[in-house]
Image (cartoon, rainbow, N blue to C red; front, side, top):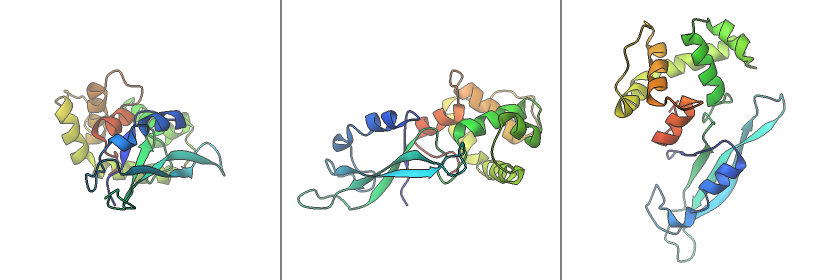
Length: 186
């Protein structure tokens, strides 16, 4: 599987604008010019509706047909608010993390964020995020050194680092994925 790309934005219009210049871009796999075509849309569970689907991104095909010379592979372009392979959005995760920094427990933070997930799901997600802290903090340090922190928990220290690295962002996790063109959870 090839690394996904992230477009800046959270709706179909942002995705459309990100893919307008597809023919001028190189394939991330074979670096061939003028071979990229839109493929199918990517849909996933909508956490706001019990039986709903939401747009998560679009597949892009590197054409190897005719005189194109591409590799025939596909890759994904995700909306910036998507956490690939997870139903929860980065905005909900960010709100949960901010509440944890504010001193709330996971259970209290989940209730006040009105997350439609079982507590066990959130504990599992936070455990996976903790396992990625080495990669995340290394990338954040490329932007700005880690700030002095009053937190003893490395996860909460990382949240403060996110705030320092992206001070004007409504959702620092979304900015992280867009800036590094890499999914937060790997």
